[in-house]
Amino acid sequence: MVILLALVLVAALNVSCGKKPATQPVEQPKPQRPLVWGGPDIETLNPILSESSYETDIMNAIFSTLIKVNEKLEYVPDLLEELPKVSDDGLTYTFRLRKGVKFHDGVELTTKDVKYTYDIHMDPNVTVPSRTLWEKIDSWNIVDDYNFSFTLKEYVAEYLEGWAYSSAIIVPKHIVEAEYKASGNTLTKGGEFSRRPIGSGPYKIVEWKPTEYIMLERFDDYFKGKPQIEKIVFKFIPTDDVKLAQFSAGEIDIMEVPAPQYKEILSKKQGGMPIEVVNYPAFIYVHADFNLRNPIFQDKEVRQALAYAWPQDQFIETVLDGVGQPATGFLPTISWAYNPNVKRYNYDLKKAEELLESAGWKLGPDGVRTKNGLRLEFTMNASAGNRVREAWQQIAQQEWAKIGVKAHIQNYEPATLFGDILDGLKFDMIIFGWVSGFDPSPRTLWHSSQIPDPTNPETSGQNYPGFVNARVDELIELAEKEMDREKRKQYFFEIQEILAEEVPSIYIYFFAKVYAYPSALKNFKPNPTQANNTWNIWEWELQ
Image 1 (cartoon, helix red, strand yellow):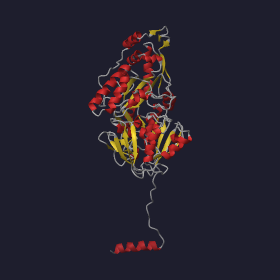
Image 2 (cartoon, rainbow, N blue to C red):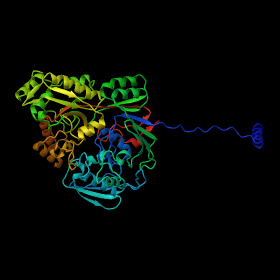
Image 3 (cartoon, rainbow, N blue to C red):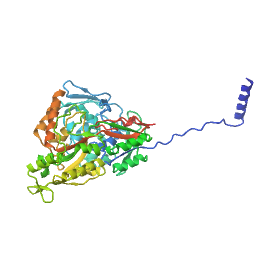
Image 4 (cartoon, rainbow, N blue to C red):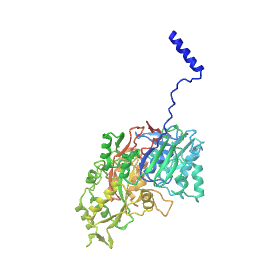
């Protein structure tokens, strides 16, 4: 007691003499560095015009959709308070929007923005990649700012899925409509909204430095709560080799790992690099599309011969290190509608030569086949710097030369490849990837109504080869109306058989998606659908 009293008196004396008690310094929060995602360059951030999976990675951060598909392939509400109610006949969908959702400029998102998103996709003056989702709607009923419904023209199986992807991003009417009118009733990939988009997502765009990067900053008023990561940079990297070097040096944090680099990335993790490497099956396939408008490709035998004359299994084993599986069509083996019995073009140079001879393509003195004055010569296009696709081109070029075919290689940066070359149909053969949905309908790809025409903005679709087959059209339409899954399965089986016989495209491989990211990044949930891995970017956290 005496000692305690003495200590109290000393403390009081120190205070009365003006001495301040010692305090611990307040630790200031360290500024958080941006999370950097490394990937290829893009062309636009306008979801109405976008057709690139890489653009989806960024748009997921900027915009919102009515619903999402999560990593378990389940529908979950996004802009909606709950999943929509569907009538017993599968025709009418009823929705209720969340209240208080704001665009980045502070304007509230309401039903008028949802309806305008439909209107602008259906506008014949706007060249959209596809109207498949929108043209199914027969009528709308806007109840108020938050409640609405629409009715389909006819039943469509798995119709809801399309609303979970970037093609159904809800755009701000007050922004897009103003640009549309100012541009003479049209929209372009070079417009202001394409470059400085205003969305309702967890991040807003701060800077887009062409060919270098896009910087995003969190939107504090995001309707699901303020994101944990302050800034995210999407850095444009021209080649896979450069991307791997920058990842190894810590200049980027997240990268999609191409198959040839998979073992090297694993060795870095095993060597102590603080990263996670995920390897999971996906609905992604790489294919080589023929431009069927080219006279030399109008012979089915030519297309079949080229399919026979490249070693698919060897390519997967050597170039991909076995990270992938042979593709026989547009569906992977994990799909419920996959047909395991379709025709396979196993490597057979003799069979390829016999097909060309029977079709009248005769070997010339220079080693190139000709028919009716046409040379069996064409050019292949792909993304410059993509090692896997460039390797496929080189192997195909060498193998096809053995059967009298001269194939040239001309590659482009992604923005040019998917813009001028693909959209303009300026290709003989083009190699790129598709992401299919977990509903297997291939309408957008193979229905004859989906053949685009660069000279006619009223056309839309992604049937870039220009494939026309009345039976395939009929089967697609039957499958979309059928409620019985087993009957739908038989329709899809026959579609795959016809495409395997006609070969409008050489299916190269389905691959497992591989991503590497920091161990400190939490809530990174890989998604095998078109939703992409940034589908839940608002949940990401760096610890």
